[in-house]
Amino acid sequence: MPIYEYACPACGHRFEKIQRQRSAEQPCPKCGAAGQPAVSRPAATSANCGSGGFT
Ligand SMILES: [Zn+2]
Image 1 (cartoon, rainbow, N blue to C red):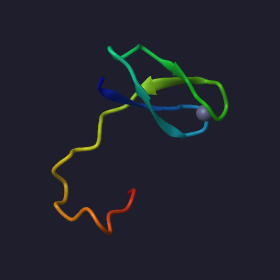
Image 2: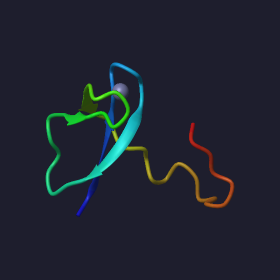
Image 3: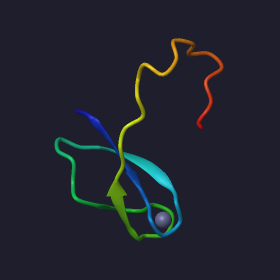
């Protein structure tokens, strides 16, 4: 199943959910606010998979 990314507008936390389909919103695991779907990170940003950071 694909992984969808969500971003919480309340606390800024980003989290991922494995779902069959993207939901309109998912509760933030940190604060419980309704997280909104976020655009997935591009997979081809860098071919270097060793020292990658979370920007
Ligand atoms: Zn939150």
